[in-house]
Image (cartoon, rainbow, N blue to C red; front, side, top):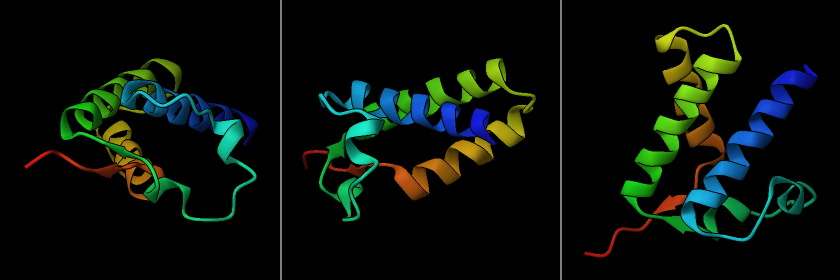
Length: 87
C-alpha cells in the first residue's frame, strides 16, 4: 500500500499549497491533535483542490471518474481543511 500512501501525501501537500499554508504532510504526520481543524480554506480553494485531486487520481491510478470522486470525497471528509468563507 505504499503507493496509496504516496498519493495521499501528494494530495494533502497540494491542499496546503492551494490554501496558502507553508505546511507539508511530513509536518503534520507526527501530530496527534486535530490539526485539520486548525487550518481553513475557502470554498473556492476547496473546489480547486478537489478538482485537482480528481484529475490527479484519474492520471495516477486506475480509478474511473466515479471512484476518483468518491476517493476525493473521503479524503476531504477525513483530512480536508475547514471551510471558512467570509460572510
